[in-house]
Length: 106
Image 1 (cartoon, rainbow, N blue to C red):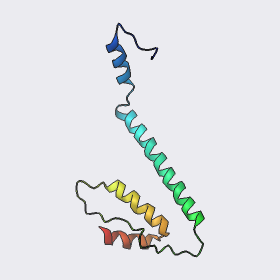
Image 2 (image 1 turned 45 degrees about the vertical axis):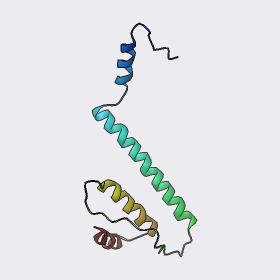
Image 3 (image 1 turned 30 degrees about the vertical axis):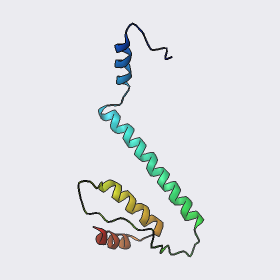
Image 4 (image 1 turned 180 degrees about the horizontal axis):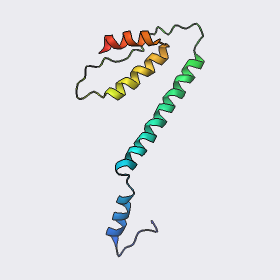
């Protein structure tokens, strides 16, 4: 049982618990920190994949392709860009190749 719980004032305990949920700028900071950790994990995984691949591998794996993006309200542009960057890094695309591939997917 939580020592903060007070049987005589349960609403006080509930109010205290609700105050612990981040709000406004604090919520934004928490979400930003989580997204940063996700990005770091993605980069670590990508580095691991790159380290385990052969040096002469052109990475022309047709199974690893970015998804197309049509701009529908159900699509998240940030998630699409993250996915596109992961695939581009996997294939070791140049900036010119990235631009060409993105133009075909939009």
